[in-house]
Image (cartoon, rainbow, N blue to C red; front, side, top):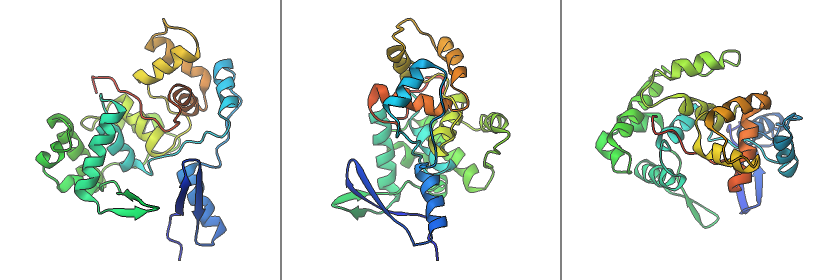
Length: 250
């Protein structure tokens, strides 16, 4: 019986060996779902992004694994540094998940929506989250656990994002991040991301570029705005899965 996931072993930081259940069709589906090995870069008309696509030809949109995982990662990363977000997430994982040892390293799974929904705000705050963010995360988890947050329809992504904005602590950046990092959507753009603007200023050699300039520029990247953003982040930071800085308003 297929388990629904590949079994992966990290040999070193550059090699990942995946052993499946021997069902080629299903193992391939999981591989493309999580690692997006079936994604190929489009021919970007923007010369800067086209050059980055040639520089990083094997970049693929590694995802957090699903909509809840995207919500969890995005909300805990709002308006803080990558280091702080990772610390918050690690403490929450330690509070809810048992240790899993593999290749001499300790791993923990992310808490489920039900875990967060059942937890007290005080426990969530002990990770370092502010009261407002802890309350927001708990509210979102409760709605997720109750099945009140539908998956986005491919032909109405914008409508789904608008509905998601009705949740506490979920604005434009967060909803876009859920699609980008949680689900690996190819054509979603995280408007307002400070790190992305910094990356664009460097790549385009334009220190005067504004958020509005970047928003307008991103229209040239369709239908793979998310891939273009990952290329810019990779050029800046050397990692295509980086979660950028968010606007303080979220």
